[in-house]
Image (cartoon, rainbow, N blue to C red; front, side):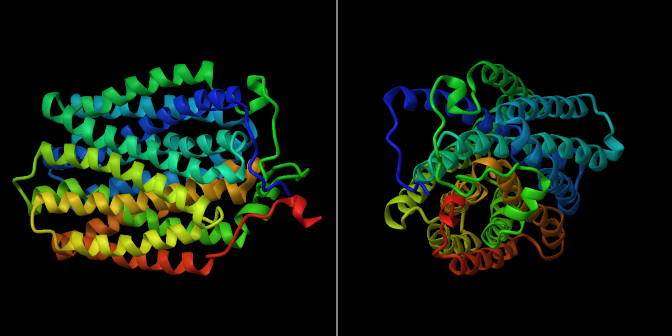
Length: 431
């Protein structure tokens, strides 16, 4: 088992940067084309007179489609490579955003808008589901297990940039341009970066003129073919991976329960809130995500010997406190501030577990499938924060919003404690 951090040449590090940077920016744009419906939700709900339950139905349709797509897209990405996956996902997501813009701009399906929007958002999220598995698949061959805490921080930064693009830039678009452009602009940007990815991204170091190396993860030294049987045996039935998946279910419920509903919450509880608050929220998400992701990665690699659950567990504890404060917000500004603090912790958790632990325990050969499983559970939890949370908000009102998310954070904390000391074991260590 090779657990020693390798010494890479400067040329290798430069080429690795040139590999993951455009890939990562493409992934950020996936978020812009995913959370644009969140920042636009007050306008869309007003335009079509939608209830919270109806809007939650649209959200859940997309999130649960994303969740179950890993069954197909994880194994496909492990077989055909992350490069092809990010290209297919980017093109599909761009097309679905264009179709949503056309539907709104031309007034199509106005009498059946919930069904039509649910279908298009579900298709968008199917293609979106290639994003996480592709970036994890590609980088699993370029980063040793001892370097992946740092990558977890990078992963969190990329997600944070996506939030800034969705909420910050998206909010700016809504102020200065018609509603449809919050869908059109992400489509154009995604198309441009997909073109860049075609020429720059390489799935493995050997494809870029460097030598492949032992990454020291769960499939290090494994000769077995990665097929569906392998996935079931070595990933889906892995107790640690399954526990992490349940934790990420909780992360998804809290993360999207906060972000998807904040714009509507501000409009209802603090009517004075406007574009400025959304711009501050987008910028806050970006900065909190950078700090949260880098802090989580650094602490994991340097204080906990590259163990991920201790960091996620500590972050969950503070996340609970942030949600309590969010539930007691006294102004639009304080609500945005506490939502940003919560984001510091849930972005750090998500980067640690979906971006890093999936590589560690799925291994290089099964990284996409492990990431797909874990990310799928994130969006199962996110789906709960859609129609079910919408129903509860219609029934009990917005004052209970933040408190409804705390039980999920508490379960996440307990489960992280249960796997506090785990580390991935390579196949070499078993011989």
